Figure 1 (tube, rainbow, N blue to C red):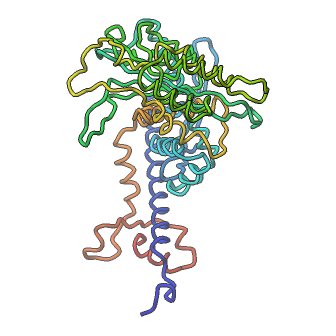
Figure 2 (figure 1 turned 180 degrees about the vertical axis):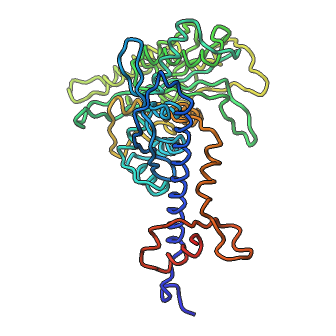
Amino acid sequence: MKTIVEEKLVSFKTLEQKIYKYICTYGAELTRIVLEKYDDELAEGRDRRAYRDKGKRGTTIKTVYGEVCYSRRVYEKREEGGEKRYVYLLDEAMQMEKIGLLSANLAEKIAMTAAESPYRVTAETISSTCGQSMGHGGAWNLVQRLGERISKEEAYAVRQMEAGEAAGKEVLPVLFEEMDGVWLSMQGERHQKMKKQEMKVFTMYEGWKAEDGGRSSLVNKTMLAGMEKSGGFHAKREALIEKRYAADEIVQRVLNGDGGGWVKEPYDPEAIVQLDRYHVYQEILRKIGDKKAQKEIRELFDSEKPDEMLDYIKAYADSVAGDEKTDNRRKKALELYRYLHNNREGLIPWQKRGIEIPAPPEGIVYKGMGVQESQNCTVITLRMKHRRMRWSVNGANNMAKILYRKENRELAETIERYTDGFLPISGMEDAVKILSAAKAPKKEGKGNPYVDRMGGHMSLLDAMRTASRKAFIAAFVD
């Protein structure tokens, strides 16, 4: 028996690629017919006195099965002041003016892929799986437009909150909040290296849900991230809270942070504030080089003896004081002392301060906080740090909006608001009839019930008949 190589038969991979390309072409033609038919219906139903038909113009929309080229009418419309404006009724109906000529399905695939991979990898993935060619600039442009739209949504939520029109209705006894920053490598307009800047990240949740095996998960976790100044970020954070919860009905808010200045600006002055334990351990390791001193300081911290810990650090700083300018042990020890002293109130976990808070709702438990560092890593750091990446402020901010909406499981819904118009289903039915009009059985009998054969001219018929083309023609062409 001869091998496939000796027979020069087409591989299944090649056959799959050719059939996929054919189906994409068929889908693009079907879409063109639907859109142009809908444009005809809009033309018939328009106010002819308000919209003057100025002919058709061609355009292209990108879809998951390739680019669809079609024509739609442009109309001249006179405004009340007498000035002229040109509009495309089909584009307005399809909401194409929002983030460009992209289908919701394609926009979602680009955004989801860009949230995991660099823009060049995103472009290669989309080009190899969606029947079209896309450059990394196309993926970048989508993320920028979508990120800007999300930022506008956030600003609108802030205005609603300030006007007393926040939509939050849920009543909650305790709200847990955590905040931290992620330092990113930055670049200027000409791609020159700039100083690192901090992205602000916020997570809120209602508590922990006990699960089998001793594991637990956060209840109703919601995140927010961005490159805004502290005042603007806190306003958006509070608007996010009031968009879901009746803020005045929250009995107690608990805030866990790294002690940074911007973290200490909560809207609620009565919030319980505690210092994140991970950052305390991190600062001890950074500032104290002596292993024995490190261990002693950590033990005092874990034993919840903040005053003794501070006294020990101060004594250690005095003991390592020297005249050599290169010896900075005392300087670093005093930096640690000031950091912990300035956050003295938050050194003891809130559960051990004797503070009474409302009991958790049924099915929820309250535990020690400290999830923000993990959230930073999985949501922000894995995509935006390392691999020699540098960001502009706007580019980082727009990517942050994509990442946190994806983590909140809101990205697909957000994309649909800016890409999806509605089409009458009759347009699809008529398009299928048009494309099916040329169908006819190749021979009498049962035939192949699983394949629709096309009777129109195809350029493939004029090409050299290779084994794969013969197989393709036998399957799909009369």
